[in-house]
Image 1 (tube, rainbow, N blue to C red):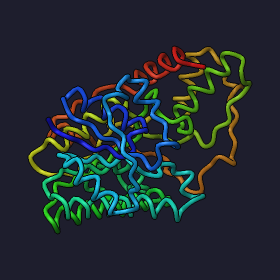
Image 2 (image 1 turned 135 degrees about the vertical axis):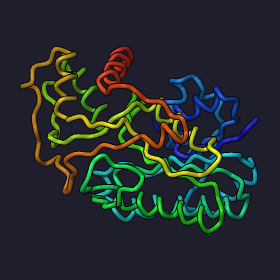
Image 3 (image 1 turned 30 degrees about the vertical axis):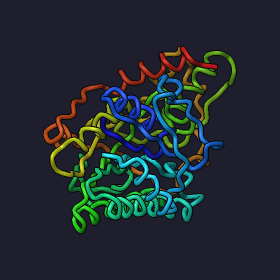
Length: 319
């Protein structure tokens, strides 16, 4: 039986990845900074909370990580832990950079010291690319980060590359573009729009306030994206691979699609310039050719199909 450690297991990707690894026969260990402050609602929702062992680990303490690796001797480590809000990173730049960079360095150094055969996956982000001169984005597109979050992820990315090239670690970056699901946190755009639109349809609230919706993004479905994470660590060589749908969708079209689906008048939408980010990217979409060719990942979902799935699940569970 293989053993895998998942940091950030309480998030949507952590929950779906734990479900996938359980189905593959893995022993799954999840980490948390605090037993009392963390929520495992995703694991409970997927009915796998009894199949995952949770360990309290401070990723800013390298000795805590070394102790964890020595205890479980994992085959694979999936690092999904991060301060992942772009907006919050502008408000808390120091904390974002400190955690998102130092935690990755600590895990890699711990692997180097304990067992260089442990395979490592780093959750990188399309936000690293920032302002680009040419679309679609692929693994060779230069980084031009536009937020503290993106800077932290770009630094972590190159740290992974450095440990792979310098110490021979099997360390990979999965560069994921936006991916959504019912388990997504409520503060993310798609989940916010769906939940508040349902509230409007039920007469609970009257309007939805959004920032700039004249932007285009590459969106996918989280349960399918975690399959790419696993496939990346099963490949015979360590690779850095872009995981995306391959096309972008206008945020306004997402809002109007959900409105139409729930029979909501467009007048219920209010644009609030206070919600605009200091710097933003007009359009961004990736090229998933390498993921399909090298690791055999398959993805053909249209994002409006994904929206149908999430809206249906959200309505069924709405409280």
